[in-house]
Image: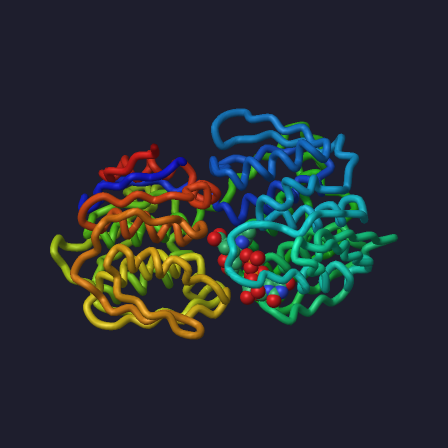
Length: 444
Ligand code: EPU
């Protein structure tokens, strides 16, 4: 069984670099199905969710070439299938982006219900609402489990044509917003998507598609407008240039936030490079409330901007209240990591989780390390303790696993984390990166 072993108590210091965003690249890769020319994507993180996306592209008939670490040339000219292999679709949440991209490309798509972290109910009704509003017919393919209960096993989408229209989402959903964009970008006419999510990865998807010739405005606001286009060739290609377009994935806000919290929790002094400071506002504010110092540092020519997080040795943290919200609010994907830090804060911190119904499975694991946490209907109350102690814990899901790493780094003694496959779905070269700032962590 693979696991991470952490000798806690090291103050993290030095420089660390953020990779491209998981939740962006898992949409950009399916989006290549909409392109009429090959493209090059770089700053691609080396994570297992990317491996699955690339496997799906290859299974559909795409040519995927790894040019160097983090850089892929993708040509979807030979794609001739519209069904995502079910065993791959079930391995990750973001496989549902192949529904939107295949529908946009071929007007037909079929995929098994997506897998991914178990965070409670994860419906896709808003995705289907967007597809149906554009003119697709949805067929839910049902099966029966060993307990005799019926469940939806897969979704099939068929459309004679996709027509631009008004899509009003009932829930602010990252996935549904992305899928609506993917399905609408080549639809006939103008689509307006209302009540959109505003996360940096939504802006990144729109930027990528626009760079390839789409007409998307308003990404990053609640209302996105898309003027459908027949071809997505990249503007240079349209003007006769044969040079392939290279697009760089936006830096990962959550990976950067995880490093910021790890730096604070170990009372360290870390410069986090490759971030977009604007994306980190809310996380930085909460850390400052805790007693950490957070500053944006720019080198003289302004080419390297990083965030420095530092905390004096022996400092006790202040308690902080957190309520998760869609961007630009405090991200649910940072809630477990922040909770790990708050176990060490003086007094009582309250956490309210508003996005996922079941994102507190890590609490039991932190308790094993000496944390004092009570869960409530929609949150957790943390009573800070002076120290955590290392023990054997598991990564219940991706961000819960990140919280375990932070707790292990800050704890006294040895922490062993099992089920690290969850962590490796979303954090690129995490062991090497953390070792680079002084963490005593090994993968065994
Ligand atoms: N929702 C619906 N119906 C839908 C879709 C969503 O009711 O059709 C609800 C969900 O149940 C949830 C809320 O809307 O309560 C928000 O869900 P959203 O659709 O925004 O989540 P998602 O697209 O499935 C993405 C990230 C998650 C992240 C959430 C929220 C990807 C692949 N996943 O999920 O990332 O927590 O947005 O920001 O982009 C992670 O990286 O660890 C992770 C879980």
